[in-house]
Image 1 (cartoon, rainbow, N blue to C red):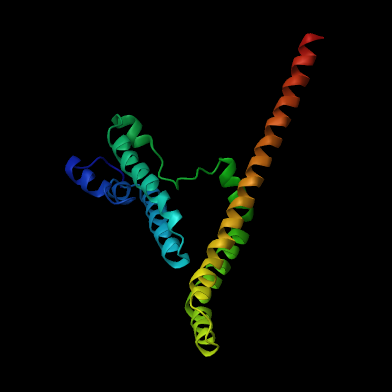
Image 2 (cartoon, rainbow, N blue to C red; image 1 turned 180 degrees about the vertical axis):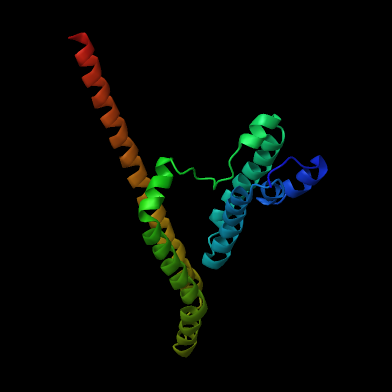
Length: 187
């Protein structure tokens, strides 16, 4: 049940991303934030990509201030809030996810599985090969552990380029529409 709670307990629960929302009864919002926070930690630990940890303070601050903003709303606005996942169903990002969710989840799971297998099985085999052939260990540390990070860096660069191209295309289409409507108004 969604209702305002004790200020002190809201403060305590707001220190854990998602817990404050869950304490006030917004379970879907809380689960979304908590999953994002702990998912980032899992990805960072399993893929050994420390740069992803820079996202954690953003998620934490968002959750902390989100709880306090909700808590300080007037009663009629507070009780009008619908508990939904943080990606609204009518957002364009959510529409993309709805259409391709199974594919996205499958690709992510396969990739994480391959990286975990790489880190836990193949690295041990490669260490044994380097011992057997008396190869220097810098090959392992400098190359083998960096391959998953290199692949993720390439994926992030490609996604960034695609996003920029998509935004540029969207701006061009809007500009074309504006020219067409302005041209019709002038005539």
